[in-house]
Image (cartoon, rainbow, N blue to C red):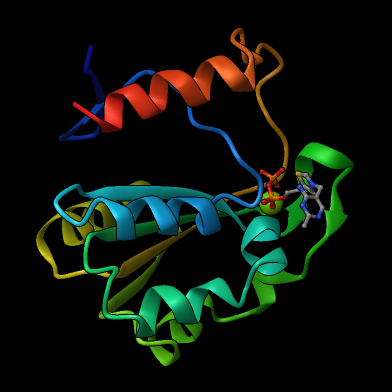
Length: 162
Ligand SMILES: Cc1ncc(C[n+]2csc(CCOP(=O)(O)OP(=O)(O)O)c2C)c(N)n1
Ligand SMILES: [Mg+2]
């Protein structure tokens, strides 16, 4: 069942079945290549981008990833495993994306730029990238996954096949 999430004036209709992987963008690139008729939004972290940086050139130069919209949430740290610095807030990620062949790349530092950036992703040709600069840290009541990775893979595979 699809679910609507609202961000400012934008409604994102998403499938509620999670497909978590770290780093995120490498397996999702393979999904995008295997399913060219589907739009694929990759929601990535700065540490994950750093760990598999070579995949950016596959997205940008393969000619097979026009359906990819790559969103990088950049807090400058590997937050979920101990806040080790990545220094990625000192790297020009949009310039790196463009140098790797992405068609469009932007950075957002406030709500208006996030909304503008998501609109630009939705309306421009891919592959495209939106970097969102954020502070480290998370809500105290942040939930944890309630289903197993195997259950998620089965449900997600089922979703892709329909
Ligand atoms: C190749 C590889 N090395 C190390 C890890 C361990 N690891 C899991 S999450 C994570 C940090 C990810 O950081 P980031 O993408 O910036 O996300 P954040 O936690 O900051 O939201 C690391 C290093 C991994 N999953 N894969
Ligand atoms: Mg991070």
